[in-house]
Length: 544
Image (cartoon, rainbow, N blue to C red; front, side):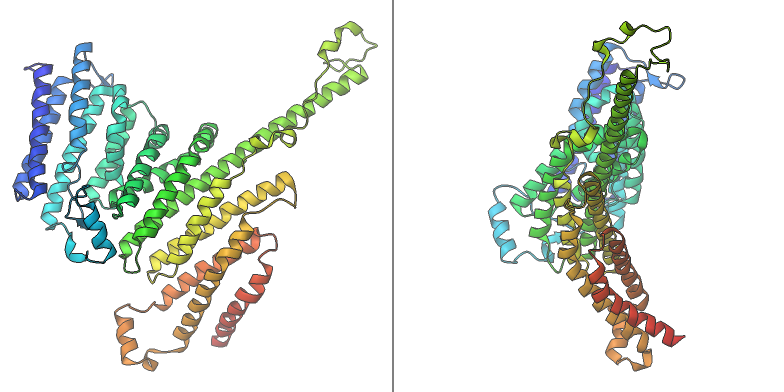
């Protein structure tokens, strides 16, 4: 750049300082910014990006930049200065979708009054605000996109040095990469720039970057959730999005066989932190959930449950596979030791020759006698065997909430809850099968108490759905009252197709429990499920 690296850094710093002041005035209501004003803010970010490109000339052949040590120090200092400003409020938190937010500031001075008003139900819909228009939201999306483009250019310029600033930019980028509470333009560009930053930092995939920073991310999420619990304010949609993306990526990483050992060690070291984070999240859900909560908010919560459940299932599968590998290795080792002992007793050498051949006795010394170390896993310390205690508690907590949310009238929420319940039962069944293989028939199976606890609400829902479906089959439109016809036209009552889909999901859970519960579910199937199937089969045969 013609003006030099240091002067260019000062210009870039002043651009974002001006952007921060402008956004602060907009957030406080002192300035009502229009579309043109927001485009100017995006222009400042684009100008700063071009300045970075002038400082760090990109070499396409070497796929890197050439910077002197002094320039690297200047760029690193600039990153420490501007990156925290870019990802802070109110610059990074410009709304890009129609998501409700509190207009009041969450400060310690007015916290007690807000808690009192929440407890007395004095806060209503008028205390929330929406994005003023689609034009404003689209303009904000352009601003956020330009900021992410600058961060991407910065990462390309710094290369592997960007890892030092990853704790600053990773969480905000994941916020914008989530489908929860983000403009589609912002979401797609955030994921694309995350991929570029991942390559710049020296990782192959985004999931690798997430796994390396998993402990930091969990700690940050837990602290944010604890603050929401303490202040009793709704969890930000962006935070829900980070939880969703984080656990989904880590669960996907766990499915790669070539990274099993590394992934297993990562999961084992972070299970306690995940359990603590889940406990904080469940506290937020229990404190803030009301029967009148919006369907979108409930769907976000269910989405988080699904991601965490997938993470727990991945943890269980990886630990079981790792233990089976150790068992096979120990068994092979003990077999080899036994064969060596047999060779020694029979006087057979390492190549199958007997002691009558040209080999002398002194070739087999006492020091070469094999030592017996047992039969592998059966003689290991119990501390080396996974207990799956935290995973079991986490899955049961999720199952309890999904058993309640399953009563929601929204078909999408019903189906998602059924999928989570099915996955949870399967995960508990894996633990039971593993313990049975290790300890025999007398071992405890966490699936059985889970069935005893969560089957009653499921069979109640199955019976009500079956009754509604039979009624919908027998009644024609001419048999309905005017009120029922109007409710059907407005989709206030569940449709016949929706009832069939929901009932098929419930029957799928019952079918899976028949397969994995080792006969524990037989009586429940005969007394609860079979009469329902009999009614529908009889109705089907009668209709034919």
